[in-house]
Length: 499
Image (tube, rainbow, N blue to C red; front, side, top):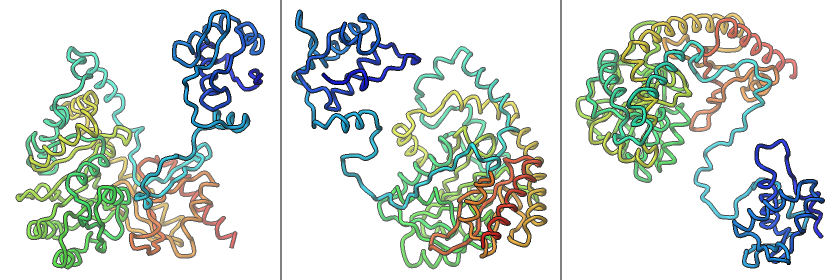
C-alpha cells in the first residue's frame, strides 16, 4: 500500500473543506502517476484512520471523485481508479511527488524566441528599500484620491450604475470623459478636436501597442532618438517594426539626420516625446516641431507625439503640441493621466484623425473589450467639476519646489561626481555620472544601503555606454529627498573605498 499518510497533505487551517482538499490530493496523485489506473483505494474507515479524519469526510471525498469521473465505487468491493483515465507517463514515487508538489518551470511545447531583445528583470527585495529614485513618477499622496473615491462611489450608486458596469457599446470610451477632454485639450493645449477624434486607453503603453499594431507592417521603419524610451522601442519591435535612430541634442531630435534618412528610404513613423524627452528630459524646440510637421507632410510618415507630462512645466508656458498645428492629419497624439493623477489608474487617451480612431476602436474590442467605463466616468466628473485643474495647480507648485531642492542637493552633495542641467519641466532630471563611477555597480551598492535608483539607461541604442540615468524627484517629499541623496552619496563613498 502507498504511504498515504505521508503523501497526502491536508491543511486544517484552510478555508477549503477537508473532503475537497482530499479529493484534490488524490487527483494530483493520479495525474502524477503515483496512483495508477484500476488501483483500489483504501476503504473509508482505513483511509480515515491513516489520515486522522472522519470516515464521513472520506466518503464525501470519494463521492466527489466519482462525480468527477476519477474513480468507480463498486458496491461491496470498494473504490477503484477509473480504468479509462489516460496517464501519459509513469514516474517513480519520489519523482512523481516532486512533480505533483512543484510548479512547472519549463514548457514542453516550442515557442518563438523573437522577443530575445526584451530584457529579464528580477526586482530587488523591496522590504530593504527605504527610498526610490524612480524615472519620474508623481506623488500619489498629494493626488485627489478622496475626490476620486467620492466620484467613483457616485458613479456606482446612481441609477445608471447597472448600465455602466455592463459591456459598453462605444469602444472609444465613456462620452463624458471624451467630452471633457475635447474642452480641456482645446483650452490648455490648443488642440481643436471633436468626440470622433478621441479614444480612451489603459494608459500610454496600451495606446502605443494599438497604434503600432495598426500602423506597421512587418519591416516598416520607425525613427526614434538614439537615446529613447525603451518600452516604446520594444513595442515597435513586437509590432514588427524596424527601428532607425537619429541623434538627440539639447533641442531634441536631429532633423537634418532625419531628412537624410527620409531621402534614402521609406519611413513609416517617427516616435517623439516633445516635452521632457525620455530619458534625457530635453524639449523639442518650436522650430524643429514645425520642421518635423513639414517633413511628415513631404515624406508622408506619421508622427507619434507622446506628450505624457505636458502639464508640468516650471519656467514658462509649455510649447503647444504639434497636434495643435497639424492641418494635414499626420499627428497621432498620446496623453496620459498617469502623471496627472496616479500611475496605477492606467488611463490615457489618443487624439488622431477620425478614420484612424475608428480603426483603433475596432482593435480595442479584442484588446480591452470596453475599457473601465466606471472609472472613465468618475474621472470625467473630476474634470467637469474643476478638481483636475485645481490639483494640477497645487501639484505644479509642489513639484517645482521639489525640483529646486533636488537640483540644489545634487550640486552640493554630488557635484564632484556628476553633471546635469536643471529641467524646465517634467518630474525627473537627466544625470551624468563620471566614468569612475560605473552605474551598475553603484546601483548594487545603493540597494545594499536601502536606496533604489532607476535602470533607465546605461547605454544608447547603438550600445555606447552613457553612464547616465533619469532620476525622478517628484514622488519624494523634501525630507525624503534629503535622506535619499545622503544614501546615494554614501553609496558612492562605499564604491570608492572598495577600489
